[in-house]
Image 1 (cartoon, one colour):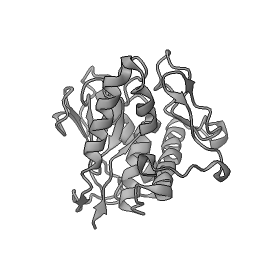
Image 2 (cartoon, one colour):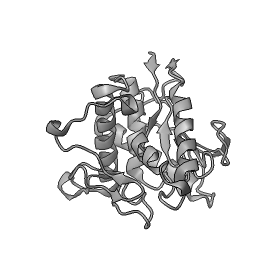
Image 3 (tube, rainbow, N blue to C red):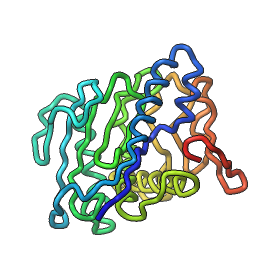
Length: 261
């Protein structure tokens, strides 16, 4: 099986563009945009990367980029290794990728994101104060955040579930990452990211907050999350980030050329 890979980020470009208007955030925002666009340019077609494992097995491998951009970085923790590291990002990436694997295995009898036991590789501490997390078609990558507006991107289990679900979409529907199919790609990741969080917390749908990235925003930001599926358009309203532009219905659908439509 072959799959078309796209760089799928949790932080949408419109937030980074808004931040670039502020002198104190401009350099970081433009660097994050440049890195994202460079990676987006690598529209590659990947073959199957890993031999399938029997259902129920999981393989997690966590690397440390040591604030560089070379992937995957230095191996820090493999499947079954003790939680010996004091590095919280390493352990969050390990635990939350495992919770995402368990969700798909237990709810859908799916063996990893590709259905055939693909190893779940994650790299933490990517670049310096990098404000994003992304699935690059082969692995997860997490920035530490600037700790002014954004905390570390491994912090939220729904962010991890969201990004790994891009891998599921890649190996199933293969939705083009532009226009309405790209919006559907993102929406599916939001829904399943929230479901991963709900299963891990033992919640029912009516008890869930349906927020994506709750806890990711630092106290200096006026907002509760990156997006709200319960009340779209209300996740944040902040002088630096701008106002949450998520439409609640098709009547407010915006046809744009930004972010591949």
